[in-house]
Image (cartoon, rainbow, N blue to C red; front, side, top):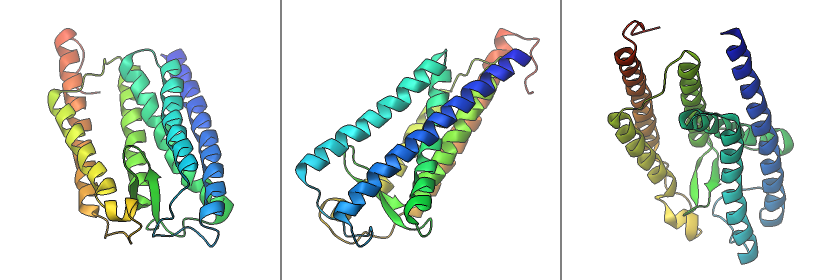
Length: 230
């Protein structure tokens, strides 16, 4: 329906505005931290943060996730719709975080530059291209769910989709957290496991496909008159 389409675009617009704005706040904080700990420019091996700064950073990162969850919960109606907006919000936030850093301080020089990605439960490290491609996957998955809802389908991921998503996530998290020498003991990072990133994202794509098949199939069982593909 036209009204539903306009409403969906309005929600997407504001959640993207929120994500881009929050990314600027995040980038600003990181710029200040790098000025303190990396006055000559960010690089590995990592510098040890003061305990009080580290504790504040842990709290700030947790608060960031809760902010993304909160705005998504306010915009969405059903659980999976809320989750879809969370994925979109997270994806745009992560991508624009690097765009703002590039605009403000000219970093990263390339998508292969290494970064500290997250601190919970252990520091995540890896080349910028890794979180950016994951963020793109999150945006596409979120849009996929929203489109299904707007076409009248009730999103229903299959058990196989759950399995593929969990395994894919664990593989990607392993690629970020495996090198504790670099993340915790100030060593030069080991080569990044790009094969783990690619494998995890392939599993994500398979999970999206199986979710689509399961959603359309279950919907056709409830409403036999509904076409199997649209």
